[in-house]
Amino acid sequence: MLRILPPSISNLIAAGEVVQRPASAVKELLENAIDAGADEISVIIEDAGKTLIQVIDNGCGMTPEEAVLCFERHATSKISDAADLSAIHTYGFRGEALPSIAAVAEVTLRTRKKGAETGSETVFAPSGLVSQEEEAMPEGTNIAVRNIFYSLPARRKFLKSDNTEFRQIVSEFSHVALCRPEVGVRLTHNKKDIYHLKKANTLKQRILEIEGRDMAKELIDIGTSTTIISISGFIGHPEDARKTPGNQFFFVNGRFFRSPYFHKAVMKAYDKLIPEGTYPSYYLFFSTAPENIDVNIHPAKTEVKFENETEIFEILTAVVKESLGRNSFIPTIDFDHDSLPDIPAPSHFNYTGSYSRQNHVRYDSILPDFKPAAPRDTESVSDAGSSTPSVNGYGEIFGDSGTSGTSGILQISSRYIATTLRSGLMIVDIKRARERIFYERYLRQLDNSSPISHQVLFPCVIELSPEKLSLLMEERDRLRQIGFDYEPEGDRAVSVNGLPEGFGTDEQAVRTAVDSMLSTLMETGSIDLLKADNRESMARKLAAAASVSAGNSRLSSDEARLLVDTLFSCAQPEISPSGRKCMTVLTEDDIERQL
Image (cartoon, rainbow, N blue to C red; front, side):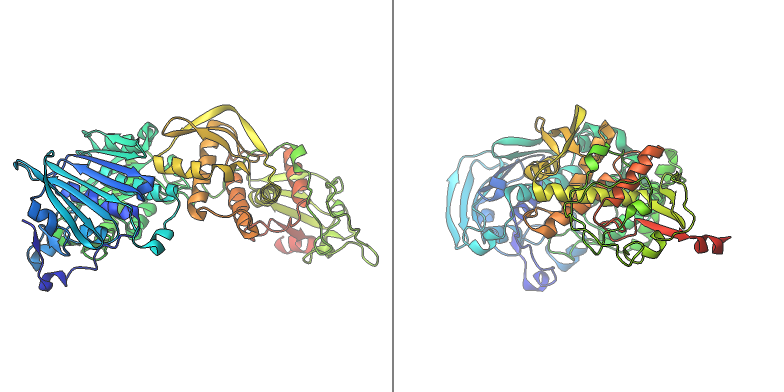
């Protein structure tokens, strides 16, 4: 029975829901439908929820009296005394979702109690109750939220683009769909089905319906039961770890929650198995007695306090390790060296930037056979009074008139290139050199709007979740400016036709490139490329992605020399875009001290 909580109880409850965006309303209405016992739910969205959010369920419904009462603060049927707060089994319990939504939008609630002959239509606005009439309708609830924030233009102005708000809605929808596979759920946006998920027999079936069938080969089942907690679900193969977060889910007693602490427990189990900066997928379901957790610590109920969190941390790490071990993933794989892309053709490395007097170096004195491309700035640099101009203290080393070395190239562990100088040995970090080369190339393309796209042999179709697909399509023009060429393929995929130079073109390389782009976009958000700082940031992230996009193969002597030559034709060859040294020089004295 619905009732208003007395102050003695309502004062114990964490601050109530605040509707920050359309996704907030979707989350609350979905959870209400689940709590009402619905096993079929439809969510209808228009204009990313700004115009309409409608949730239709076949749950228990409400009486006309309850349909009015549910818009009062702290009106709830979930708890009746303070003790109930420590034994919560439902999603909602505060009785503040509908009042918060009605305060910022027009709400029409059509509902019919199970067993009742008729239902009622109740209309609320920010000013309060507008009307209530008896209506014929199916059992269950149909609630429509229109024109969110229409009475608060300042808040409506701060809503993001439709694509951004839509992705937030998809995220909230997915949380409910994943933890309730036994419920059929449907999401429609602007009259187009995004998800139509029938009741699933297993959790794995529901995961594949949401994430795509390609996920099947990635999932490893996991499970353990202790006196403290039971853990079940799936984790991802180490080889399928991605740079983009997004497939990491924790649920407790059927409730989604976020936990950086438990995320560390999972990552600890994957130590030495995945490259740094990547994330494994996981769908982990905790089950414990309600009195052992506190879900009343955050208004959005996405944080949960566990009574035995230290012990759970250790249990979680152990069970993930056990599952990985059971599937023969031995933690001795060496990921110390990032994978390296193929060296592009020489014709693409002609530098057209500018040299300044400060950083111009006579590199032909370092590498006798080296002839850099002509710079845009043709200002001559006088050698009067100097053997060789100095750059960052390298002048004396590079200008040494000692015994000249050979022009040979030595590659060390697929990570470094060593070449002799007149007075010692220069060692170049391959990955950082590539980052510098790619960074300056991408920056020129962004500055000049002249993308060079490396076409793949066969278009590669990649299946994506709706939110990731939405992100790629929203940024399609921006990515095309730097060489990404792709188009939508049906409702759940993109067909990739070309990539920026520096990225590999085989299927795995294309998938890695798309993953890297998604990671970059999720980190940077939508940015204005007219601003120089934004272009530099984008070029830096793309260069880092390109430098690790292909295999860790050794370079031929010609490829290694081309890389060194191209590095020294860059405006700032000494440092990577992240500020780390691309090279170091060992003098004869340095070498002698080591012997």
